[in-house]
Image (cartoon, rainbow, N blue to C red):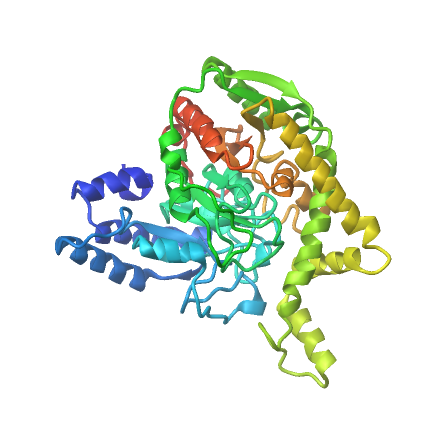
Length: 490
């Protein structure tokens, strides 16, 4: 197996056994980026020269007997909405096209402390608003399994780069499914942690009460390792939760006998692709064979989750993006004749259509006369959704659903139909509304060979349970051993 196809835990073994050096590993990924980036378009900024210099320094320091982080010399890709000191952080928007952050996000600091090597910043839907990575100002990312299809979004660059073996793992952000849905489309593992487990300091905000940073990896063990590295309380983030440090890898076991899994019937009804449904039913049978107890349940508030999510997310986006006005931050129009005209032109020219759509919707639901009817009502429904999940977790260890109602769709097929695009998030948004952890893992492919994702939702701060269940399933179906992206155009 080629170096770039190995998961991080296997790369680590080879580094420790001196079968590979950090320079060899980094060079292999740079070669893969140079070979595949023109097809996939996963990166906004590549850091090939800096990455090689860092790798050589790591090797030299190891030779000198210096104590470095356990994962020193392992490369990574970072979604381009996480601040990186001295490197562009664009959010894939014209508004921040030339913004160079003066500081690092907390997650980036944690990776730097481990001497993990950044290969670059990864493409995304502008300001994380989208489900296909077609709303980037710079480029459209393609799905490595079929280059005519989308990789999902908004962390499409992160998922595509991992699937294409251009990075061994990556960081994404998830506001309504933006880690899990692209992971499903690209046949990789995506973990959205409990809200507050990973610091949001230095993450450019979309919807502050929903956003969460998390790992996108080749397998479940790597997801647990990366969560270990980035989780933890941060005084710079007031929503960061204080809890005892956990080692999530300790819970990766094959034995899930007696675990109870709820399967909500609402997620298997109208709108779910038949092949997705069939693969999920096979996955359920696999869990039964592993000794898990499966029961059909009802989450009757799920039908309101999508509307609730888009009201809350757009309201918060309207507030958060107010600072990008051509004066405080961001792109400034070249020609204007008054202060009001400067604001208007800077924002009109700097933001793309989808961002403007969400700002307008968010401003509307927060406006006088509509606040109670929309935003306040959405927050009340949010409480109902949270309570419904809490009731479910009194009985079940996890809830199993599809990650997405469909496999990856063709580029351009939904980008002009916002409602259809929003429906791509229907299986994932309720998790963010309730602040829960959830993981997407591949469970099969459709007739065209496109990956299908399964979502496991856990109770708050119980990532170890869903990691354990995902790990046990992964060991049985051996997805990565049986399927690999083909970079085809159909």
